[in-house]
Image 1 (cartoon, rainbow, N blue to C red):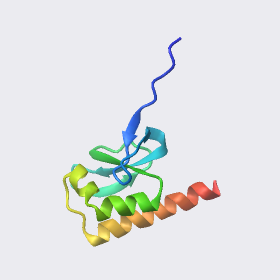
Image 2 (image 1 turned 30 degrees about the vertical axis):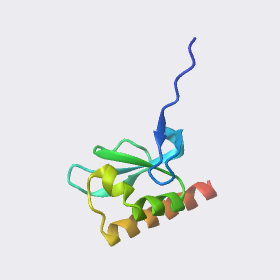
Image 3 (image 1 turned 120 degrees about the vertical axis):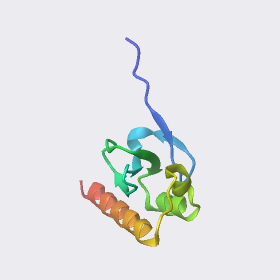
Length: 95
């Protein structure tokens, strides 16, 4: 039996290739709303970042998310993404 191929994606923050399940998808919905998609099933254009607030902040600062999602991020949206990432990291830390 052939081993299953593990899907790899590139983090838009640190530009490293990692396993898809290690990353969090940031998605722009068809309505233009940008949000984190921890399950990875939301419809829309997606980009991947490490489960690390520093990578998300770098991706926002270097405008990589804007480029990948073809959208301009407001300060409020960027702050909401950072807050959501912090919340998800805290949840994972507590199990």
